Amino acid sequence: MHSGQPILPPGRASVFYGQGQPFELVTQPVPMLQPGEALVKNLYTTICGSDVHTFSGRRFEPPRVVLGHEITGDIVFLGQNHPGIDLRGETLQPGDRITWAIFSVPPGNDAPREDIPQKSSNLFKYGHALATDHDIFNGGLADYCILREETAVIKISQDIPLQVAATISCAHSTVAGALRVAGDVAGKKVLVFGAGMLGISCIAMCKEAGAEWIGAVDVDDRRLAFSKQFGANAGYNIADGIPTTLPWPEADLVFDMTGITKAMEAGLDSLRVGGVAVWIGAAFPNSAVQVDAQKIVRKILQIRGLHNYNFDDFLAATAFIEANYRKYDFAALVEKEFTLAQTEEAFAYAVNNKPVRAGVRI
Ligand SMILES: [Zn+2]
Image (tube, rainbow, N blue to C red; front, side, top):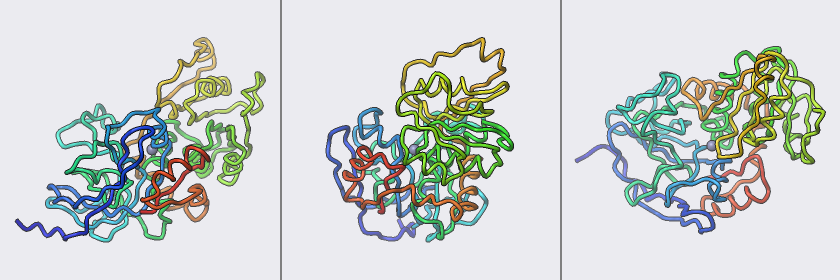
């Protein structure tokens, strides 16, 4: 049977077997695509905070997994019945540089609500799937990625630096979702807890959305310095704990990227009347947040949560990066670069040096 799929050299994949186990670089032939799939040559993968959590044993994945879900690459081949268009209606063809959503909803599985596709049943997530002898190209730390049927793809310019393009599909899209659930940002005073990739992206997006004032809260002066380069008016280092009298002004909007109980509690205490707290960091089990219900009621506060993002957020994040990658030095946030064969070193660096991101050039 002839599908027109080009014969390609076998691809490498860096397989993770669990905390404390060495990565294994395996080589496998590229399988024939199923209908609706697309083959991508991965070019760059950034190591997300959740990858680091997995590496460190704080989060659990299948026993054999190719990590990495902040990826960019070029289309090699579109399988039979692939629609050949991206999320913006642009034609797709081999050679196109793309970003794609971290998840794919298998056909026949409905979203719980139209604007929450990321919570559909049987969701497939890149960089989180079991690696098998027949299906290993499903994450970022490999030469190839096979995009499942109905994966949302966006064609992007090759002018966007690879290390910036890679971060669209997790960090920036999640932050675009956080701004969506936050509501109007223009003219608001904003506090951002946690100045890693999500926090810094949030600061830049709030700045571009017309926030009146933005404060960054973190425990690391280097990250607070980045925050100011990306639009924060002030940075607050709380490495010694959060003072009883809060050192920052009251805010209309508080974003929590930390998932740390004390930070979320301080965030609620920082809100002025009518304020909104958006929580996206608490994607891991932690102790319960103490909420003074009377304060929520009397100050008319709202808490809104978000996990991952929807297709509108993915579009908004891509448009944001296209409009701003020359204005803000997002490439500088990928503080060190490694090769695929150096996956182990890349993770060790991410754990020990806590860069905003470590990058892997494939
Ligand atoms: Zn991520």
